Length: 270
Image (cartoon, rainbow, N blue to C red; front, side, top):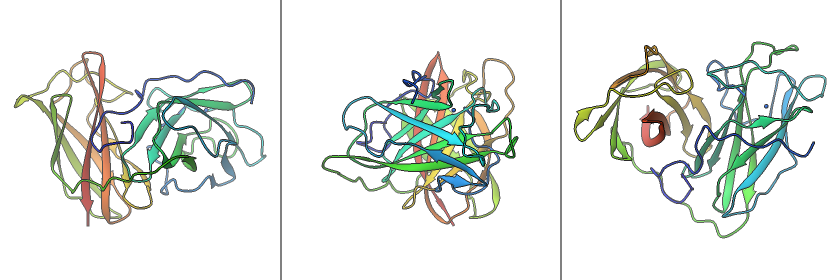
């Protein structure tokens, strides 16, 4: 999703790996508390010298995670096949990129971002240290980045039960209440027929994240459907714990035929 229209495909595939930096982190958040809107928690800090990035071209975002001792963290636990999950989200929720950056020996990560549109973007890092006082604790930390240029905002599409992407129809069933855990069921169809050839992706059949309209707060929806072979679907189950009322933009990523698809839908939480 290049940040120009809601519901478009992601501007970079989530399987993309970035190149190590010139010396200047992986783990999706499944259990971390908080909304990810701070760059610091429990002595761990997301640091970066990249305050702006160029518009309309690929850009490398370099960052590090420092621990309570203020030294770069270099040991991270694997979570859903990765040691670091990285998200770039535009302030109006039009832009969405999910990457798995690479880390240099000195603890500096590089996320190789696809083209970004002018405006404010928030860069989320999701990880679990494998050493130190935070070992085994899931964190989500973020910082904002400005993309210079003429900014055009797009209103969030209204809440809906279904959306389409790449010929697939994704339907979401469930009525979450803010601050409580509720089940969500996602059904994937194509041409009116159930899709049963979903391939495993990040140790699940679909990866689901949500961002809150207005403040871009982060939430991860935990998959409860067990992976059983190379063919999944059409129904997928998730536990949704969305802490704040209002509109949330859900991004569902799933793989078929070796191709990654991203569907976006607005969910209203009471």
